[in-house]
Image 1 (cartoon, rainbow, N blue to C red):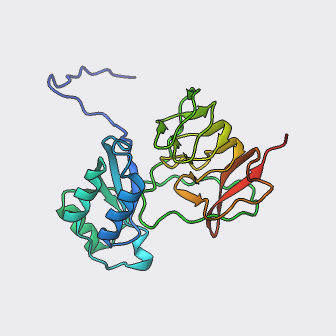
Image 2 (cartoon, helix red, strand yellow):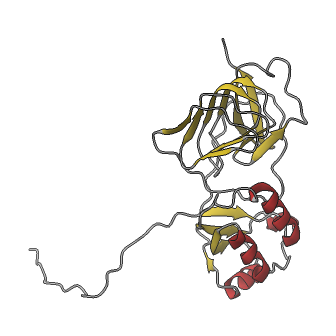
Image 3 (tube, rainbow, N blue to C red):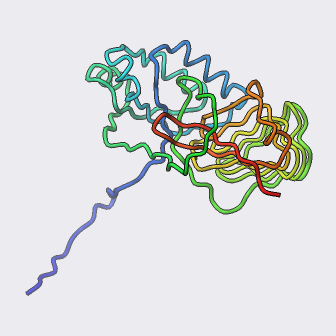
Length: 258
């Protein structure tokens, strides 16, 4: 026999589960001066890139190199806020580091999980690791629809497809920069900078009909023109993807069939 009992809900509030979207900063060094310089180098010309993103500080990378390093959170938090990151939580530190974080007003989030980039079939290639201490944002899958640019991009111009793919129908000239949280398609010569998976989407790709970029980057792994592309790729149709392997992530550059 079942019995239904009358209930009464509070008039002024309700308690429900909620999920909060966070980007993650994987701190690899306690050297905050170096961190500030690299953040300025990477994001200094993109002041609105993060737009107040709630941020988890992940101290796990420090545990191998500097497990007992003291972290000056009173200095760290303003550095992040200067780039419009809003630090809320921390995880992965030693007992002393976590105590320092909690004293600075952060919340412990030991159960936060960092999504991992799936590993595609390996193809030999080389890449330059991302600068130490650069942010490793949580992957964001762009929704359907892409930002389409049908004019040439001149030196000094920058286009950012936030939360989606970017399609460029004209030349990206040297000194221009195209950025997308998803894929980048350039149906013309790519001679400037191309940054795909800008917020950590590791399966993002870069496509160009004429591949000759100053810089290419996917999910923080980058390569500059100081490392020349092979003749089979340079100035030819090509794609770039990220290969996540046991020895670290690397960029894979492949010619596109005619």
